Image (cartoon, rainbow, N blue to C red; front, side, top):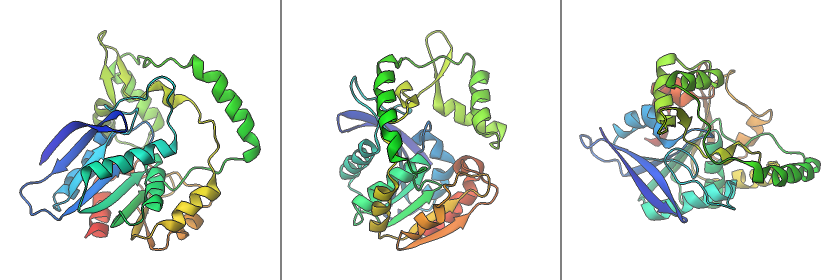
Length: 287
């Protein structure tokens, strides 16, 4: 298995791109673009990427802007869904794959749906892993959210907060993902954290991500993108312990060519808890 990492210039930022290839099998000609979720990074697709690479696919998994080893936005910048979609579009232009499939998890699934709806002719396959938009925002709350965002933005400390030891970081991750086995948590912590000069560990995402977006999620607008998706689409649920908006099935039904599958005991972080089973589902979808 060949795993490479390189910084790629995209929209004035450098994105760290993780690439997985298996030179021992004939290439399939399909490039699979893996889009991670919030507070995650492209590197943690490894447990799923390696089995898919053994199918001959070219697997690329970028760290989104402000996450992992990618550049954060500069002063005055922020992180909105259109920014991520524009980054994917520019990266795909740079990659120029002959055939493209996109896999998105959680926030990355929402980004992937927006990308697939914007450019339905670019994708051969789409897979959404519990990432079909968040809870609909109430329009009447938009004013308070905007005021709060403007008030708090100058107070954000962009220096990552130290967590202390590696064990402290593992415990933090375990608190958010109690169903993930300890060895997996340790390996994920190594991929998602870094040690400063003082030896103290911190997460690698930009602290600006901790702020709440000034605009509520517009569900009706998002539905318009779902209706535009035309490629065969697989929606994967992690079962009852996953994360599901109450109208999830109605949203999936808006995609013209969608099928659903479930990993009943996987939970939301299915690419960590059930990577072999998830890879098998994706392999069948891409075959």
